[in-house]
Image 1 (cartoon, helix red, strand yellow):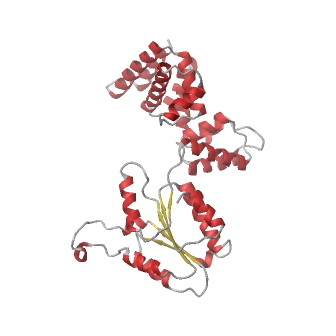
Image 2: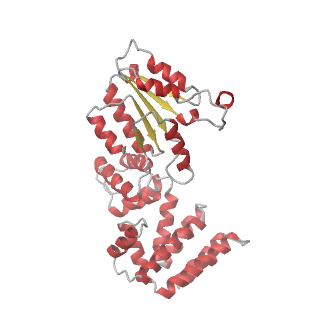
Length: 352
């Protein structure tokens, strides 16, 4: 079940006896959790009808026993269970009586065959994601709690989805942020919508009503403003703007930022520009369409940045730029007098 489907069910008050939230996406998880509490308990019943457990400290059997017990103070109850991954067996053995876990899913499965009326269990499995090595671990969690038939998958937003959600958050906050500033905010926070929502709230408190949000405001308030500065360096070098590139590089060096990260972003931009050049793409729209169809994440402002690089550099210059990036990356990893000297030489040679 997707978060949108879950929220729609909560509006209709279609409540199941138990839910399993799978995934580490905090923003959607908080929205779904609040929707469930509102649907079951309302705004006034949370104090008496809400119970919370952490399976790192309590057992699954204790949670089931509490769910079976009738409450004298609340007709409807929600039991939030944090860290449900802790109940999974740590060792595999055929002799389960000797080596198996104390808590098993059998008690939970028996309870869910005849659940207590008015009681809703919510398991918040937020330790693992749906990517990489965590994918197998999250499937173990799903299998262990298979008795819970209602599962909500809280996968990370893609950058396009994060940008759409950020635009809605900006509209609700009445902030004046243009599309470029919004893209900068989303990119600097890596598409983490929970953090984007927090930063938009901070910006709404910091900025006087009606005044547009500037890049300086974002750099002052966003903790990862270094990423925004790195994107500014990539953009300047992509335009072959030597003065701006050296200015941004000076800012990065004074703040003690990790310069190989800037090279990694620039390398990606040059690779995309080289592919665009060889494919004969002549507009940001063509670039966005081409890479989106190829499965490479590409949005409007990013396509515009790549197009600027394509316009400023010939194919030979792009290939030379890739060689300069390789040489600079090698020099940054080897014994050298100073990172700044390596990067300044790189900027001067690239914009020559």
